[in-house]
Length: 163
Image (cartoon, rainbow, N blue to C red; front, top):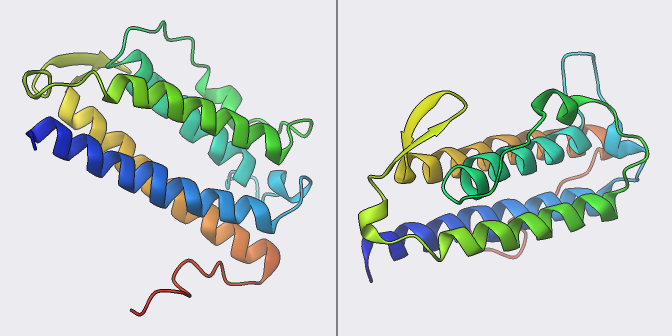
């Protein structure tokens, strides 16, 4: 296995298997109305966090590593979109997964050091992948916490695993 294959496989496991499944579990535990709940004005809703993750993943990987045009409006991700339902967010996430996977499959070992300019910062392909992976992990934790606050229930992520 090449270095790029190892990195891409780990990215897909951490983002598409772990984070996605946890976000989908949280979405299944709340209502469409609870999707936009915020405990205070400084804490984003689950819906906003999902939109933010999708905006970031698209900007950094699909546009940053890939060749798609970047039209991200980051501030809009944090507005209340009460007309957006959970099913629509799942669709956006699944669409992003397809777009990211297409870019991931194009990455070769020699690309990992390639320089990219994203959000005014100089990055390389490897650091872009690490950024998006850790960004998903961070906000998935916030989504989990908000879900527990809203529902007063455990998510059961590890209930079938002998830890």
